[in-house]
Length: 219
Length: 219
DNA sequence: CAATCTGTATCAAACGATTGTTACATTCCG
DNA sequence: CGGAATGTAACAATCGTTTGATACAGATTG
Image 1: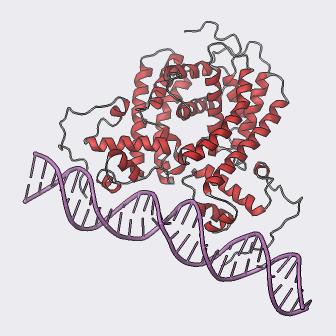
Image 2: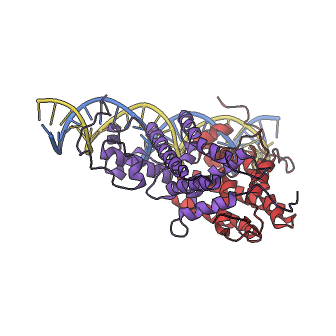
């Protein structure tokens, strides 16, 4: 079969980078068409889920026939995995860069949350709503996704470990709850009312518990 | 050839109620076969999602051919809606009964959370993981689900309004975050480690903020 | 008691549509 | 010309659903 990594095609080398987050997402890709396919597929997967998105749907979005996509992709499954892993990698990089600028553990956590929400809730972003779409993909695809996801979550393992949490709070559960929120806010968020920063702030305000807990607690 | 379960159709009036939560779920249904179909479909929808579950899959689970299901159901879409609405109704009833026994606002919230998690995390329960499967179903089905869901969430509107929350916390966001958690814990929960009660307790411990917030807050 | 009817439950098979994918032909462009 | 990009057309599978036949239980009838 034709080698797909062969570069030096149509466009000039400094022509790329049209959009914001999404443009960044697949920045390393050679062909603009290929990047358009990745973005269209990502957005459709996020909108309707993996199983409910057909290859022809993706093709229509970029002005190609379904079968023509196979000049760029190997299979629908691998396309999904590629999008998923890329989104996760970009998110990880951005979050790491954001928390690096902060010293205080709570400030670091908030920076991570706000950054992740900024990605999740950006309509251009297209990133990670797919992460809650495990169900529909075949088992062996799931395994690939989970591996990548575990690596990503290591960021939050460290972040949560550094928090001066009140005792009685299970840090493992705490981390999972926080990630559950960050991953799913996109399900109900509608732009206009609150900004991603405000929601991130609310989350941290709720999850922020200083060392001394309830002064006159019941139990 | 034909299986052996052909006989034994009609049942006595006091013979029903085999399982726990799931048995309760579709208790009012007349035929045992019909109830088996509802339960099998509910569990499959919860496992793989709506789009990735075929009518033939459901049939196989109950020992029928795919087409034979249409003696009991009108369509796959209506089957999904019925399961969804029933699960929501059962959950609502159980939560209302649970919070009725408590007076303190925080105790009422915890009762609601623990009850809902008990339903969500019960492997027999089968109830509501479907609620996060909006994406795959057609638009007009979504509208039906959303209507039911809004009614359900009214419970939590009242519960959260009664909380003596620290100022600076948006009660609308607070409620949505809480519901997001309750709806999605099932994605990572594995029985054995922690009980639903313990997780519910952790959630409330995190979401519990007395009126006087951080004594020397940063912002 | 046997024969017949009736209605429910199920199977077997097919329907048209859609799925992911491929093979081949064509167009485009340097 | 030559290779990359796209269209055309089909493939086998699977999808939700329908149709018609069949098995069977119970009531009705002789």
